Image 1 (cartoon, helix red, strand yellow):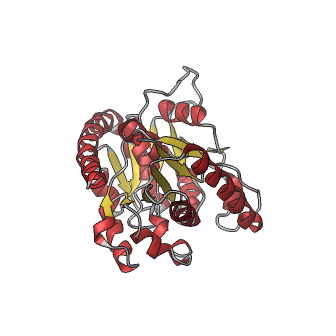
Image 2: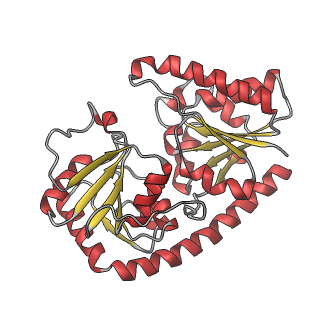
Image 3: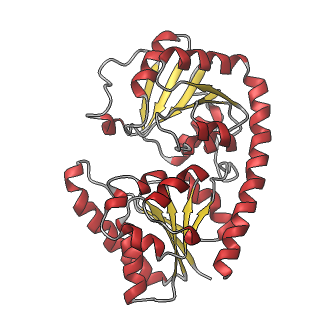
Length: 327
């Protein structure tokens, strides 16, 4: 049975981690303009490329990563006019159920017409229900710890000890200013921030970055994997409850201790191998980073245990997805 996973992003670890189990092909459509004013044109071009993929490959199962929700409309358009038997699975990140994506005309109706709507943790059930998604299509499928099997890692040392990797998207939920202030409080630690810095414009102030902050930009997968492999600690913060943070799953897969925001869902999902901090408090972040270095060996052992436990839990959830598809 031919399966195709479509995501309108340059790269996302989640579909890659699930690929060997479900057996789909992945297509990341990464084309993007530098200005958001051209976003409608960008979506039109991606829609055209996606429709061509559907027609050329004629999959039996289409997986769509949401948001953006217009991708869901395209999958249903293909089903109505070209292949009424195709199975549609919506893999929904948290923003799917927030404005503007959930308010895109017809989104809730199309979610309910999917064969499966996957959410990444149980905390997302409530906003999904509130917005009208039906229980019979909704399934929790958490994110597997990242696999390092296909990663080509060099032995090059990038930064002197101690240093912390902090992958960022520079979205509004990230406490970038608090991280910068924490770096000023812990000048002995080098903070390496990845991600497209231009996205911070109008959201975060990067005009006065301390000298122990390294902004390395958005990196190719191999280079990012090398950073994950080489770092001492992974720092992952969010201001919002219900966000599970993809980088935390990557840290677990690579066996790295974590400093995480002390949200309820992060403490539930990553209950070992982490120091939890107040994402809005620079003093808490700085102290948490120092504590993580002091407990590095202990936390590393805990992360390895956590990886095994999360994999077992994920396999149990994935088996329920298999059963639902056979109904």
